[in-house]
Length: 321
Ligand SMILES: Nc1nc2c(ncn2[C@@H]2O[C@H](COP(=O)(O)OP(=O)(O)OP(=O)(O)O)[C@@H](O)[C@H]2O)c(=O)[nH]1
Image 1 (cartoon, helix red, strand yellow):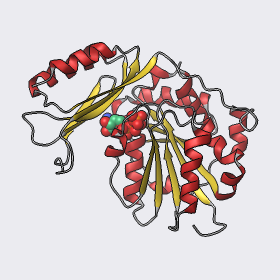
Image 2 (tube, rainbow, N blue to C red):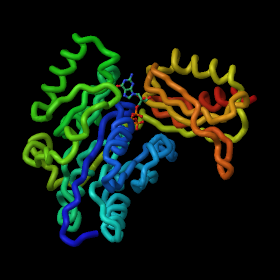
Image 3 (cartoon, rainbow, N blue to C red):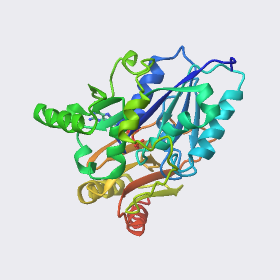
Protein backbone atom coordinates (compact mmCIF):
# COMPACT_ATOMS: atom_id res chain seq x y z
CA UNK A 1 0.00 0.00 0.00
CA UNK A 2 1.15 3.53 -0.66
CA UNK A 3 2.06 5.09 2.68
CA UNK A 4 -0.28 7.74 4.01
CA UNK A 5 -3.03 7.23 1.48
CA UNK A 6 -6.52 7.03 2.90
CA UNK A 7 -8.60 4.22 1.40
CA UNK A 8 -12.31 4.98 0.94
CA UNK A 9 -14.75 2.41 2.26
CA UNK A 10 -18.27 1.84 1.00
CA UNK A 11 -20.56 -0.04 3.37
CA UNK A 12 -23.48 -1.82 1.71
CA UNK A 13 -26.28 -2.79 4.00
CA UNK A 14 -29.96 -3.62 3.74
CA UNK A 15 -32.24 -6.41 4.82
CA UNK A 16 -32.13 -9.95 3.46
CA UNK A 17 -32.72 -10.04 -0.27
CA UNK A 18 -32.96 -6.28 -0.72
CA UNK A 19 -30.46 -6.24 -3.61
CA UNK A 20 -27.00 -5.78 -2.05
CA UNK A 21 -25.28 -8.40 -4.20
CA UNK A 22 -27.05 -7.08 -7.29
CA UNK A 23 -25.70 -3.61 -6.53
CA UNK A 24 -22.23 -4.95 -5.76
CA UNK A 25 -22.15 -6.73 -9.12
CA UNK A 26 -23.23 -3.57 -10.94
CA UNK A 27 -20.53 -1.63 -9.15
CA UNK A 28 -17.76 -4.13 -9.89
CA UNK A 29 -18.70 -4.39 -13.57
CA UNK A 30 -18.75 -0.62 -13.87
CA UNK A 31 -15.44 -0.02 -12.13
CA UNK A 32 -13.21 -2.57 -13.83
CA UNK A 33 -10.29 -0.20 -13.92
CA UNK A 34 -10.26 0.21 -10.15
CA UNK A 35 -8.77 -2.22 -7.71
CA UNK A 36 -11.66 -2.84 -5.35
CA UNK A 37 -11.35 -5.19 -2.42
CA UNK A 38 -14.64 -6.75 -1.40
CA UNK A 39 -15.50 -8.07 2.03
CA UNK A 40 -18.64 -10.16 2.22
CA UNK A 41 -20.22 -11.37 5.40
CA UNK A 42 -22.71 -14.23 5.27
CA UNK A 43 -25.38 -15.12 7.73
CA UNK A 44 -24.98 -18.85 8.03
CA UNK A 45 -22.09 -21.11 7.32
CA UNK A 46 -22.05 -21.09 3.56
CA UNK A 47 -20.41 -19.32 0.65
CA UNK A 48 -23.29 -19.11 -1.77
CA UNK A 49 -23.09 -15.33 -1.88
CA UNK A 50 -19.54 -15.29 -3.15
CA UNK A 51 -20.67 -17.65 -5.91
CA UNK A 52 -23.27 -15.10 -6.91
CA UNK A 53 -20.79 -12.24 -7.14
CA UNK A 54 -19.34 -11.65 -10.58
CA UNK A 55 -15.77 -12.80 -10.97
CA UNK A 56 -13.49 -9.88 -11.51
CA UNK A 57 -9.93 -9.15 -10.63
CA UNK A 58 -11.05 -7.87 -7.25
CA UNK A 59 -10.14 -9.68 -4.15
CA UNK A 60 -13.17 -11.12 -2.40
CA UNK A 61 -12.80 -12.04 1.23
CA UNK A 62 -15.57 -13.65 3.18
CA UNK A 63 -16.30 -13.66 6.84
CA UNK A 64 -18.28 -16.80 7.53
CA UNK A 65 -17.58 -17.29 11.18
CA UNK A 66 -20.73 -15.61 12.35
CA UNK A 67 -22.08 -12.14 12.28
CA UNK A 68 -19.84 -9.29 11.16
CA UNK A 69 -21.12 -6.99 13.86
CA UNK A 70 -20.30 -9.43 16.63
CA UNK A 71 -16.86 -10.29 15.29
CA UNK A 72 -16.08 -6.79 14.28
CA UNK A 73 -13.08 -6.31 16.50
CA UNK A 74 -11.74 -9.64 15.39
CA UNK A 75 -12.16 -10.85 11.85
CA UNK A 76 -12.91 -7.56 10.16
CA UNK A 77 -9.90 -5.76 11.63
CA UNK A 78 -7.66 -8.74 10.81
CA UNK A 79 -8.84 -8.72 7.21
CA UNK A 80 -8.38 -4.96 6.92
CA UNK A 81 -4.91 -5.19 8.43
CA UNK A 82 -3.96 -7.87 5.90
CA UNK A 83 -5.18 -5.59 3.15
CA UNK A 84 -3.04 -2.73 4.41
CA UNK A 85 0.04 -4.92 4.40
CA UNK A 86 -0.41 -6.06 0.82
CA UNK A 87 1.94 -4.72 -1.78
CA UNK A 88 -0.80 -4.08 -4.27
CA UNK A 89 -2.57 -0.76 -4.19
CA UNK A 90 -6.22 -0.89 -3.18
CA UNK A 91 -8.41 1.91 -4.52
CA UNK A 92 -11.48 1.15 -2.48
CA UNK A 93 -13.01 -1.33 -0.09
CA UNK A 94 -16.62 -2.40 -0.35
CA UNK A 95 -18.14 -4.25 2.58
CA UNK A 96 -21.38 -6.14 2.01
CA UNK A 97 -22.86 -6.91 5.40
CA UNK A 98 -25.37 -9.67 5.97
CA UNK A 99 -28.99 -8.63 5.82
CA UNK A 100 -29.30 -9.43 9.49
CA UNK A 101 -26.99 -6.89 11.07
CA UNK A 102 -27.08 -3.48 12.51
CA UNK A 103 -24.32 -1.61 10.65
CA UNK A 104 -23.27 0.43 13.72
CA UNK A 105 -20.36 -1.81 14.80
CA UNK A 106 -18.97 -1.83 11.27
CA UNK A 107 -19.13 1.96 11.21
CA UNK A 108 -17.60 2.09 14.70
CA UNK A 109 -14.60 0.08 13.54
CA UNK A 110 -13.55 2.85 11.20
CA UNK A 111 -14.16 5.64 13.66
CA UNK A 112 -12.96 4.23 16.93
CA UNK A 113 -10.02 2.06 16.10
CA UNK A 114 -7.06 4.40 15.81
CA UNK A 115 -5.14 2.42 13.24
CA UNK A 116 -8.24 1.90 11.08
CA UNK A 117 -9.20 5.57 11.28
CA UNK A 118 -5.73 6.54 9.99
CA UNK A 119 -5.87 4.34 6.93
CA UNK A 120 -9.54 4.12 6.02
CA UNK A 121 -12.30 6.62 5.57
CA UNK A 122 -15.98 5.78 5.23
CA UNK A 123 -17.14 7.22 1.93
CA UNK A 124 -20.76 6.22 2.35
CA UNK A 125 -23.18 3.86 4.01
CA UNK A 126 -25.60 2.70 1.34
CA UNK A 127 -28.75 0.95 2.47
CA UNK A 128 -30.79 -1.04 0.01
CA UNK A 129 -34.49 -1.17 0.76
CA UNK A 130 -36.67 -3.87 -0.74
CA UNK A 131 -39.65 -1.79 -1.85
CA UNK A 132 -41.86 -4.87 -2.01
CA UNK A 133 -41.02 -6.64 1.24
CA UNK A 134 -39.75 -3.97 3.63
CA UNK A 135 -43.20 -3.55 5.21
CA UNK A 136 -43.02 -7.09 6.57
CA UNK A 137 -39.85 -6.23 8.47
CA UNK A 138 -40.18 -2.66 9.68
CA UNK A 139 -40.99 -3.75 13.20
CA UNK A 140 -37.75 -5.70 13.40
CA UNK A 141 -34.71 -4.02 14.86
CA UNK A 142 -32.12 -4.50 12.13
CA UNK A 143 -33.93 -3.14 9.06
CA UNK A 144 -34.88 0.01 10.97
CA UNK A 145 -31.26 0.54 12.06
CA UNK A 146 -29.95 -0.10 8.58
CA UNK A 147 -32.28 2.61 7.27
CA UNK A 148 -31.39 5.01 10.07
CA UNK A 149 -27.63 4.79 9.51
CA UNK A 150 -27.68 5.31 5.75
CA UNK A 151 -26.47 8.42 4.02
CA UNK A 152 -27.85 7.00 0.78
CA UNK A 153 -31.04 4.95 0.56
CA UNK A 154 -31.65 2.94 -2.58
CA UNK A 155 -35.35 2.17 -2.80
CA UNK A 156 -35.01 -0.94 -4.86
CA UNK A 157 -37.50 -3.26 -6.60
CA UNK A 158 -39.72 -0.37 -7.63
CA UNK A 159 -40.80 -2.54 -10.58
CA UNK A 160 -42.81 -4.58 -8.09
CA UNK A 161 -44.76 -1.72 -6.50
CA UNK A 162 -47.31 0.86 -7.61
CA UNK A 163 -46.72 4.62 -7.66
CA UNK A 164 -48.90 4.96 -4.58
CA UNK A 165 -46.86 2.36 -2.70
CA UNK A 166 -43.75 4.21 -3.79
CA UNK A 167 -45.08 7.42 -2.32
CA UNK A 168 -46.03 5.76 0.99
CA UNK A 169 -42.62 4.16 1.16
CA UNK A 170 -40.94 7.48 0.51
CA UNK A 171 -42.84 9.08 3.41
CA UNK A 172 -42.08 6.17 5.71
CA UNK A 173 -38.36 6.31 4.94
CA UNK A 174 -38.21 10.08 5.24
CA UNK A 175 -39.66 9.78 8.72
CA UNK A 176 -37.07 7.16 9.66
CA UNK A 177 -34.12 8.96 8.14
CA UNK A 178 -34.66 12.53 6.91
CA UNK A 179 -30.94 13.11 6.15
CA UNK A 180 -30.31 10.40 3.60
CA UNK A 181 -30.52 10.96 -0.11
CA UNK A 182 -33.08 8.65 -1.73
CA UNK A 183 -32.75 7.06 -5.16
CA UNK A 184 -35.36 4.73 -6.70
CA UNK A 185 -33.98 1.71 -8.49
CA UNK A 186 -34.87 -1.51 -10.25
CA UNK A 187 -32.25 -4.24 -10.01
CA UNK A 188 -30.15 -1.67 -8.14
CA UNK A 189 -29.50 0.00 -11.46
CA UNK A 190 -27.95 3.37 -10.79
CA UNK A 191 -25.05 5.36 -12.16
CA UNK A 192 -22.14 4.37 -9.94
CA UNK A 193 -21.05 8.01 -9.94
CA UNK A 194 -24.04 8.53 -7.63
CA UNK A 195 -22.75 5.92 -5.24
CA UNK A 196 -19.08 6.31 -4.74
CA UNK A 197 -16.58 9.03 -4.16
CA UNK A 198 -19.31 11.29 -2.79
CA UNK A 199 -17.97 11.34 0.77
CA UNK A 200 -21.56 11.52 1.91
CA UNK A 201 -20.96 9.75 5.21
CA UNK A 202 -21.44 12.32 7.93
CA UNK A 203 -20.63 11.37 11.46
CA UNK A 204 -22.74 14.19 12.91
CA UNK A 205 -25.91 12.85 11.30
CA UNK A 206 -25.03 9.37 12.46
CA UNK A 207 -24.53 10.57 16.02
CA UNK A 208 -28.04 11.99 15.95
CA UNK A 209 -29.29 8.47 15.29
CA UNK A 210 -26.92 6.80 17.73
CA UNK A 211 -25.55 9.27 20.28
CA UNK A 212 -23.50 6.51 21.96
CA UNK A 213 -21.88 5.28 18.79
CA UNK A 214 -18.43 6.44 19.78
CA UNK A 215 -18.61 5.41 23.40
CA UNK A 216 -20.71 2.32 23.64
CA UNK A 217 -19.42 -1.16 23.67
CA UNK A 218 -21.39 -3.36 21.41
CA UNK A 219 -24.29 -5.40 22.77
CA UNK A 220 -26.14 -6.83 19.88
CA UNK A 221 -28.72 -9.46 20.59
CA UNK A 222 -29.72 -11.44 17.58
CA UNK A 223 -33.34 -12.16 17.15
CA UNK A 224 -33.48 -15.79 18.17
CA UNK A 225 -36.63 -16.42 16.16
CA UNK A 226 -34.66 -15.88 12.99
CA UNK A 227 -32.61 -18.88 12.10
CA UNK A 228 -30.40 -19.99 9.29
CA UNK A 229 -30.04 -23.57 8.10
CA UNK A 230 -27.83 -25.05 5.47
CA UNK A 231 -28.54 -28.33 3.72
CA UNK A 232 -25.70 -29.92 1.75
CA UNK A 233 -25.99 -33.21 -0.10
CA UNK A 234 -24.25 -34.62 -3.15
CA UNK A 235 -26.95 -37.05 -4.21
CA UNK A 236 -28.85 -36.02 -7.38
CA UNK A 237 -32.36 -34.61 -7.10
CA UNK A 238 -35.41 -35.26 -9.23
CA UNK A 239 -36.63 -32.25 -11.20
CA UNK A 240 -40.33 -32.90 -10.81
CA UNK A 241 -40.04 -33.43 -7.06
CA UNK A 242 -37.89 -30.30 -6.67
CA UNK A 243 -40.54 -28.27 -8.50
CA UNK A 244 -43.25 -29.61 -6.21
CA UNK A 245 -41.25 -28.99 -3.06
CA UNK A 246 -40.39 -25.42 -3.99
CA UNK A 247 -43.98 -24.72 -5.04
CA UNK A 248 -45.03 -25.87 -1.57
CA UNK A 249 -42.31 -23.84 0.18
CA UNK A 250 -43.10 -20.65 -1.70
CA UNK A 251 -46.86 -20.96 -1.26
CA UNK A 252 -47.08 -22.24 2.29
CA UNK A 253 -43.83 -21.11 3.90
CA UNK A 254 -43.19 -17.96 1.87
CA UNK A 255 -44.17 -15.66 4.70
CA UNK A 256 -41.66 -17.26 7.08
CA UNK A 257 -38.90 -17.65 4.51
CA UNK A 258 -37.03 -14.36 4.52
CA UNK A 259 -34.30 -15.59 2.23
CA UNK A 260 -33.38 -18.88 0.57
CA UNK A 261 -30.78 -19.52 -2.05
CA UNK A 262 -28.50 -22.19 -3.32
CA UNK A 263 -27.24 -24.56 -5.94
CA UNK A 264 -29.01 -27.78 -6.93
CA UNK A 265 -27.67 -30.94 -8.50
CA UNK A 266 -30.63 -32.13 -10.56
CA UNK A 267 -30.45 -35.47 -12.34
CA UNK A 268 -32.24 -34.32 -15.50
CA UNK A 269 -30.17 -31.12 -15.86
CA UNK A 270 -26.55 -31.19 -16.95
CA UNK A 271 -25.58 -27.90 -15.30
CA UNK A 272 -26.05 -26.77 -11.70
CA UNK A 273 -29.30 -24.94 -11.05
CA UNK A 274 -28.75 -21.70 -9.12
CA UNK A 275 -31.78 -20.28 -7.38
CA UNK A 276 -32.75 -17.50 -5.02
CA UNK A 277 -35.88 -16.54 -3.20
CA UNK A 278 -37.19 -13.72 -1.03
CA UNK A 279 -40.50 -14.63 0.61
CA UNK A 280 -42.82 -15.65 -2.24
CA UNK A 281 -40.59 -14.39 -5.03
CA UNK A 282 -38.47 -17.16 -6.44
CA UNK A 283 -36.15 -17.44 -9.43
CA UNK A 284 -33.85 -20.17 -10.67
CA UNK A 285 -31.51 -20.50 -13.64
CA UNK A 286 -28.88 -22.87 -14.93
CA UNK A 287 -25.44 -21.83 -13.77
CA UNK A 288 -22.06 -22.29 -15.45
CA UNK A 289 -21.06 -25.93 -16.11
CA UNK A 290 -19.67 -27.95 -13.22
CA UNK A 291 -15.91 -27.81 -13.46
CA UNK A 292 -13.76 -30.95 -13.31
CA UNK A 293 -12.55 -30.29 -9.81
CA UNK A 294 -16.00 -29.42 -8.49
CA UNK A 295 -18.10 -31.98 -6.68
CA UNK A 296 -21.60 -32.14 -8.17
CA UNK A 297 -23.82 -31.47 -5.22
CA UNK A 298 -26.59 -29.34 -3.76
CA UNK A 299 -26.26 -26.65 -1.16
CA UNK A 300 -29.17 -24.60 0.11
CA UNK A 301 -29.34 -21.91 2.76
CA UNK A 302 -32.65 -21.05 4.36
CA UNK A 303 -33.01 -17.96 6.51
CA UNK A 304 -36.30 -17.25 8.15
CA UNK A 305 -38.54 -17.01 11.13
CA UNK A 306 -39.20 -20.08 13.27
CA UNK A 307 -38.12 -22.47 10.55
CA UNK A 308 -38.30 -26.18 11.24
CA UNK A 309 -35.04 -27.82 10.16
CA UNK A 310 -36.47 -31.32 10.39
CA UNK A 311 -39.31 -30.45 8.07
CA UNK A 312 -36.92 -28.80 5.60
CA UNK A 313 -34.67 -31.85 5.64
CA UNK A 314 -37.65 -34.12 5.11
CA UNK A 315 -38.67 -32.02 2.10
CA UNK A 316 -35.15 -32.23 0.74
CA UNK A 317 -35.02 -36.02 1.17
CA UNK A 318 -38.33 -36.29 -0.70
CA UNK A 319 -36.59 -34.64 -3.70
CA UNK A 320 -33.83 -37.26 -3.97
CA UNK A 321 -33.87 -38.97 -7.38
N1 LIG B 1 -38.05 -7.81 -9.35
C1 LIG B 1 -36.88 -7.38 -8.85
N2 LIG B 1 -36.02 -8.28 -8.33
C2 LIG B 1 -34.83 -7.81 -7.85
C3 LIG B 1 -34.49 -6.45 -7.87
N3 LIG B 1 -33.26 -6.30 -7.33
C4 LIG B 1 -32.84 -7.53 -6.98
N4 LIG B 1 -33.79 -8.46 -7.31
C5 LIG B 1 -33.74 -9.90 -7.08
O1 LIG B 1 -33.91 -10.12 -5.68
C6 LIG B 1 -33.14 -11.22 -5.24
C7 LIG B 1 -32.22 -10.78 -4.12
O2 LIG B 1 -31.21 -9.90 -4.63
P1 LIG B 1 -29.73 -9.85 -4.00
O3 LIG B 1 -28.98 -8.81 -4.73
O4 LIG B 1 -29.13 -11.21 -3.96
O5 LIG B 1 -30.09 -9.39 -2.53
P2 LIG B 1 -29.11 -9.31 -1.26
O6 LIG B 1 -29.52 -8.10 -0.51
O7 LIG B 1 -27.69 -9.41 -1.67
O8 LIG B 1 -29.53 -10.62 -0.48
P3 LIG B 1 -28.80 -11.24 0.83
O9 LIG B 1 -27.33 -11.09 0.65
O10 LIG B 1 -29.23 -12.65 0.84
O11 LIG B 1 -29.32 -10.49 1.99
C8 LIG B 1 -32.41 -11.74 -6.47
O12 LIG B 1 -33.17 -12.79 -7.02
C9 LIG B 1 -32.40 -10.53 -7.39
O13 LIG B 1 -32.32 -10.87 -8.75
C10 LIG B 1 -35.44 -5.51 -8.43
O14 LIG B 1 -35.24 -4.29 -8.46
N5 LIG B 1 -36.60 -6.05 -8.90
